[in-house]
Image (cartoon, rainbow, N blue to C red; front, top):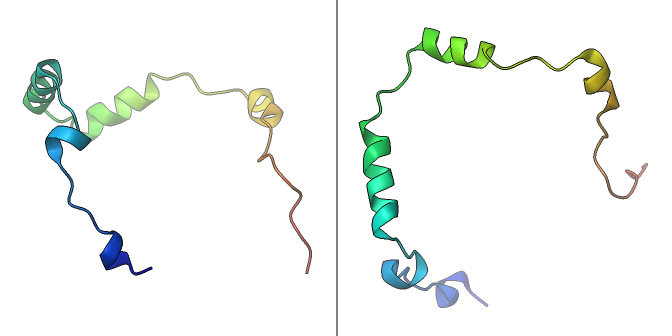
Length: 69
């Protein structure tokens, strides 16, 4: 099968339904001024840092064990 034969045009009305509320939310989001670099750093600093114990307690990836060559 060739990719060109499986190509189908995207129909906005059918494939991406958008409500009036969606459009209004997008317009409101467009009006928000972007943060300066300093504001962005302050925003990131407002989050609490996880403790070392919390980071160590995180589980790693799940799934089968990696293979050895």
